[in-house]
Amino acid sequence: MNLSTARRLALSLPDVTEEDHHGRPSFRVRGRIFATVPDQEHLNIFIEPMDVDGVVRLDPDVFAPVMWGQEVKGVRVHLPRASSVMVRDLLTAAWRRKAPKRGR
Picture: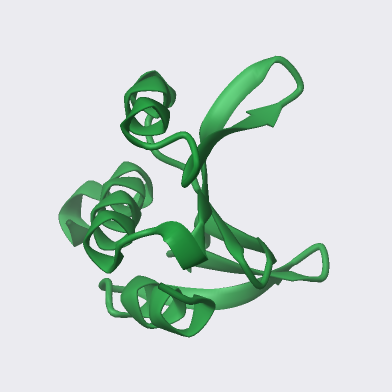
């Protein structure tokens, strides 16, 4: 898995745009961020906080919690070790959280 493939997967979801977020790419649905790119090897995906621990337990070498202060906000994916199926599923879950109900 690489950033180009992750980008393609994110942009394939309905109404998604890629926009700057503090000098780094972000993926948004109707203006709401559901994933960011901190560097070329990682993708932060903002899934339900209660789901993060389960995802990290699947493979701690691939997934880590994304924290904002003391709050869990999502999961960081180490792209070179991740499967495209898992990244697609996580992006879709994050997209569903942020997409307007009528856009799902």
